[in-house]
Length: 327
Image (cartoon, rainbow, N blue to C red; front, side, top):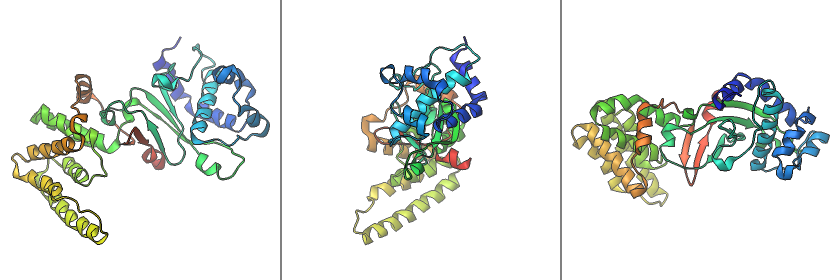
């Protein structure tokens, strides 16, 4: 029997045909061969409630976005068992997102966002933003948002992308971490940890944090750091003039003072490290911890190869727009 790694590799080789078969199933074609698997993974060991309409009318009943994801997951598993892996020995496949991964028999996540390009994912550690997920994931972009406006509902997967686990990290933040990692480590391991903590916890909608991120991006070039500090001062004045005109609270003076103070410290790199560290502590207090031993060991060797956007609310919000729009 093939290992999980071997099965994932085989799926990647056969992914185009798998998706063709999945889209045919979403059109109500060749469903009979899927019935035994759909019954097994369905609630109560019966065919799902939407099956009859899909089979007879080639349409779905009115579904919400979450249910669309469940439909695609069930059909996808049925296609894997009856088509993709029909010539190899595999265990019966199961859906079990409660275990932390949608398809545990392959250690593979399955996500089906619509054309908002986004999904919400459980938050385990802020350092996932740099390290990625524990599991690979297949992301299938559907046309649900468009189709639901014109019932009866028909669905198709219009794009798909297989992500390695390390690619489920933030594209911009990992690029900065990757660019500076070796250089920072040659200066100080503690500095490196503090910069990485800032990248993991940053809220890019925060005025000071967004300017600090630009400075971190060029931190090896002191002239560029000086230019960005001047830009921050101009932006501070401009934003507060706008806010005054809109009767909004001004950005406090200590926000710009924290940025200007960078060049008062020598070396300037230490000033940057102190500035980002102060932002993290002020905004997160004890919640923003340094990487643990496992995370730090991985950060030292990880490819830092993020391909998506990740922001944090109560959960992670993965945004796949960068990948799908570029395709």
